[in-house]
Length: 200
Length: 139
Image (cartoon, rainbow over all chains, first blue to last red; front, side):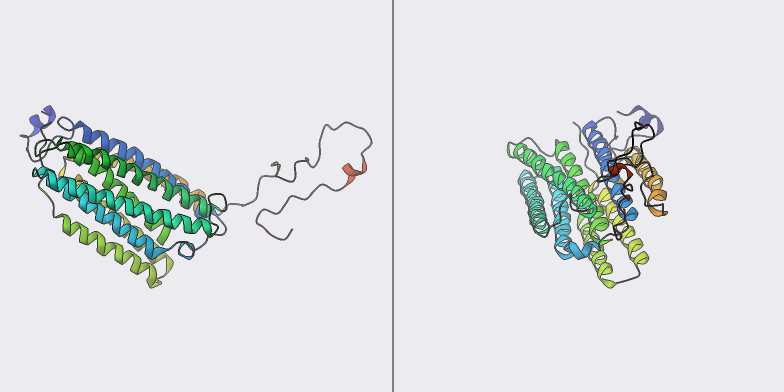
């Protein structure tokens, strides 16, 4: 029980203390915020380099916006399957959890496949990290995000295998919610990267 | 671990909002609005989308206020980075290297103050190599 909370007001069971019962969630949030700082640094470097350059290409003249918009849509869908998975296990539906975790992994894998296709296409066209500042910032930003998606798919794989071994039920699902936090964060970052790198 | 489930938000409504905002972003992008209007619209919509994901998918709106404070406080630091970098990026500064820099292809310093006092060889008398143009202008 959280002493400060009990002194101020009676505990609302629908509002768990952020500190006592669920420390794993706090730790994931702290990690995500440090990760957000990394992405903020990369995005700031991108903005500074771009605004300080004498010439900069129109991004959409090099990058394919429709394909990436589709990729954004796929990632948003995978976020929805993730919340459906968390919601399923909160009701004790292990089969639903396994189905939705698998669908989330599928969405992440399709995202990575499309990104690999895009990178191959761009590299064949001559855009590389060392060719221009545009290439350097593009590959570092999308690559750093892509590594997060790949890590997320692997992380989801571990949670799925634990779910298959019957580790989660209606009373024990914190690890599922925590992997969900990570997955939504990766989606959130992509929303920003898509806007700043592809559209603006 | 005594896990208490939150009251579940309507996830499909959040999904439709995200979908509509994504389509609107791509639509505005192809609309050909003035650049400043487009950029402001895109940034606002991206931040709204990010906020929706954090508030509903990540349950930030349903958690205790303390967690939201923990989460938002480091973002203030990000804002400080942005504000700190903006003057350097936005305001023009002379895009020329400082005089004392030795650039590639110009490794011989133009003049050595303490060079040995022997008679200068013809090579040393030759005019010092001009600094290569930086902005890719005519050589």
